[in-house]
Structure formats: structure tokens, C-alpha cells
Length: 206
Image (cartoon, rainbow, N blue to C red; front, side, top):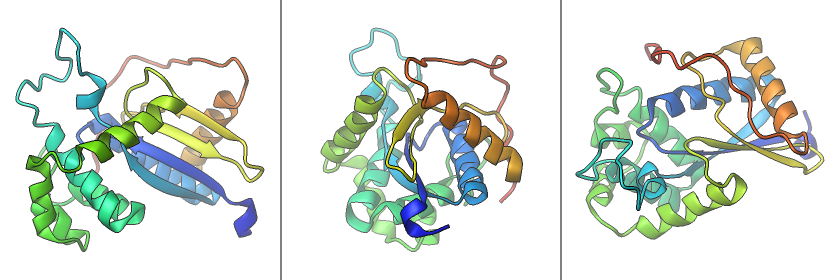
């Protein structure tokens, strides 16, 4: 496919969400099946839930800020491709169960300085997190993680939440889900489509 006819998919994610991780693996599969480029951005459940009386994430200590701050530091200093590598490493290197792996080890595996892990305990990149989160919210107000925005070869853009999956579609199955999501999101006046109730996420090795 020629460069001028290439699809792109901008993906905003909170790195701590297991369902978002599965969606990201679907997107990588779908991009391969449909000749698209994926570009990585951060959003934050901590920012999303600020000011709420309840705590839907059960994070009173604010730990969810830690991985997203490191992601923001990676994006700011090394670019979106490095962020994509780091995000992959977070969920595949030293991970146990349905939570992230070792932060410093994941940075090293992604070819990044281990010292970037210190950003997780600093407010230095909070402005970057908030600005990137605001970009996602401008596309899809009131949404959660993830937000996907697909731009077609003709420059038209469609944004949607998810799609939420509990296992990763592969190959042409991933491509068909891409086709359906883009088709629905591109229809003026389209708002929501729901499938079955959530199942437990299925993680694959590697």
C-alpha cells in the first residue's frame, strides 16, 4: 500500500488497564491485517476520575499515576514508537497475573534508560499526561480507556471507545473487527453498540 493511502490509528491508553492492553494487541493485529500504522498516546484513569465521590479503580494511594507518568516521560523524550515498545514490555516482561511487570526491567527491555522509572514518583510529566488525556477527551468526551481514532487514506477521521475485548482476535478476525468498528464510528449520529457482558481477560504468553 502506498504511503499516501495508508491508514493510521491513534491509540490513547492508560497502561494499567488489562482490557485496554488486550485492545492494543487487537489493534496491532488489525493494523497488520489492514496495512495501517499505529501511533501511541497516553490517557489516565487517575485524571478521568478526579473529583468523583467514589473511587471506581480502588486506588486511594494514587499508584495508577506511576506507570502513566513513566509512559508520558517516554513519549515526551523518545517519541511514540518508544512508548509502544515500553507498553508492550510492561505487559510481557516479568509480569505476574493481570498486572504490569517490573517498571525498570520493562524500560531496559524496550531499549530505554532504567532511570526513567523515577518519573513515576514525580509530578514533572503530569502536564504531559493531562494534555494527552485532553486530546482523547476532545475526540470522545466522557469516554474511558482506550480511545481509538482512525484516519483513512482520504483524511477522514472516526473515533471510538475500545472496542472492548476479553481475548485478542488474530489475523483476519482482527481485520474484520477493524472494518466493523471503523464502519460504525464513521456513520454520522452513531453513538454506541454493546456486545455480551464482560468476561475475564484472557492473557497469552509472550
